[in-house]
Amino acid sequence: MTTETNSVLNSVKEAFAPVTEAFTKLQNLEVPEAAREFVKKQAEAAKTRAADAYAGSEKVTNVIETAVAGSVTEAAKISRNIQQAIYQDAEAFFAGIDKLASAKSLSEAAQIQSDLVRARGELLVSRAKASTEYLGKLVTDGAKTAQDNFAKVYGKTA
Image (cartoon, rainbow, N blue to C red; front, side, top):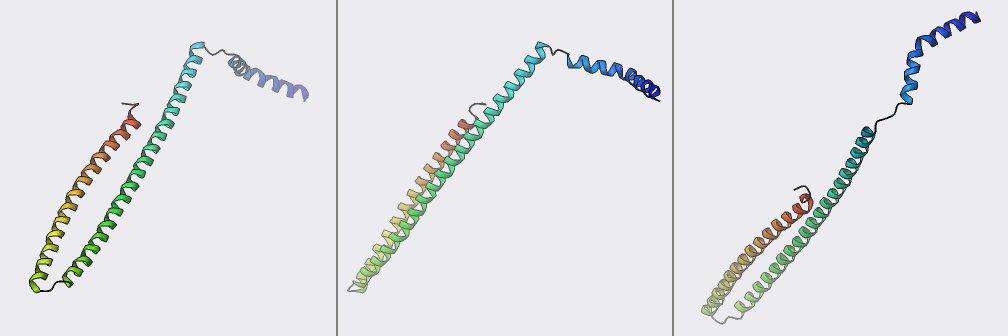
């Protein structure tokens, strides 16, 4: 039985001898220099692209932070200006009532009311003009900032 087992084992070894020989040669196979250089160059290029992608993402994050910070600052300015305008309107209203209360005649009250309406109209025109100029400046600055930010982010690829 041992002879039969050895015989079968030898037959299997002989049958797989070409495969075993191929694996042995494959392990000792030398990779050509050109193939090694190609792999090194591709790995270096991938490393560079990964670094560029990281740098680009950092730029995008900085741009977003700058834009958000600028927006918050402008929103705070607008809110303060609105609050100030409301306060000024309340002061003007109460000052107008005080003036009207001090009128000694109906014609004097009419004149005071007329002056108050005219002053109120001038104030509204002045605020409208200032708001238009401010919004124009804000849009211009926003467009310039957006253009600068796009240049920072995409300047390398353009």
